[in-house]
Image 1 (cartoon, rainbow, N blue to C red):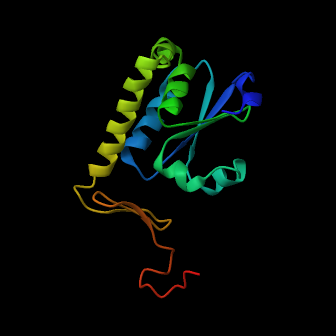
Image 2 (cartoon, rainbow, N blue to C red):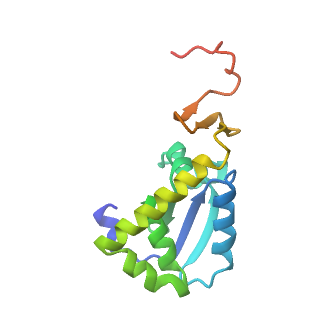
Length: 157
């Protein structure tokens, strides 16, 4: 996080989540039901709304890894994003403080990696195709095929 945003108080967090992921949608719904100390607003990652609000973000990366944006310009990714989301929840702020320690951060990172692995295997070893051209293959990771180029007829450069 840039030094100029480090001292800015956080009053609102935007949680960018993969709207096509069942686990992500479940977590989004759970978050909206929790008592908040800081307002959380879920926005689908890679959506037109996300691109309009945060033009400087790498929106393809926000589909691969949870990203949270604070109202003061703070950007959190991966385990740090989960920790800041827990920090925003009244009942989970003490857990967020424990996870923000060096040993807690290892636990948080492990949880994020486990969730990513679950997402990757959720489709029974089959490819997970997104409407925006991205495909996840459990053995190869994410690949991109521009819409309308599935037959290989599009020029690449």
